[in-house]
Image (cartoon, rainbow, N blue to C red; front, top):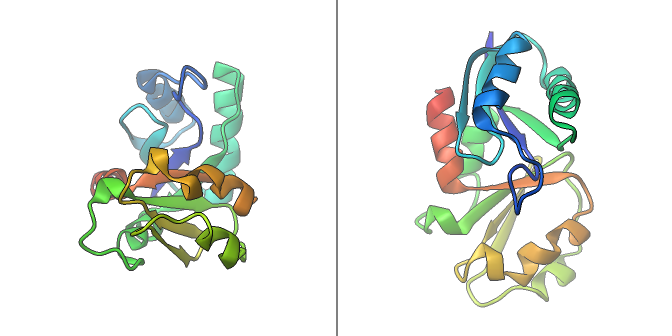
Length: 173
């Protein structure tokens, strides 16, 4: 059985997508996934399964929809894929709360001029396989680039900061 990390988009954000973590853990265990753990309240889980990522994504999304009434975009990545996101970027030494990795359904070719037009001093980004890493020293919540990223990269995505990613990698270890 392989170790997997699931990242659900839009869970427990501003009163939408309510997903109690204890019930989410029970749901995942009920699907036959092993060693299920969740991290914070934003749709992060680690578990063991012999199934491939694509099958797990579909299964988890359908189960959440059936039980909780909404179908969040679901990303399942291997421990190694998520661990690579911790180091595959040029922002070593930056505050991990200010570096966000957007996990993408596919790797788009962005309009670099449009991205550059939105950066503040010190902001930066890096594109990796299935990832867009964004450093926002002024804060993610005030970043125009972060705000407009879904329109600039029109593919399904979900973002986590490096602090969360490190915790998930350690849990999935």
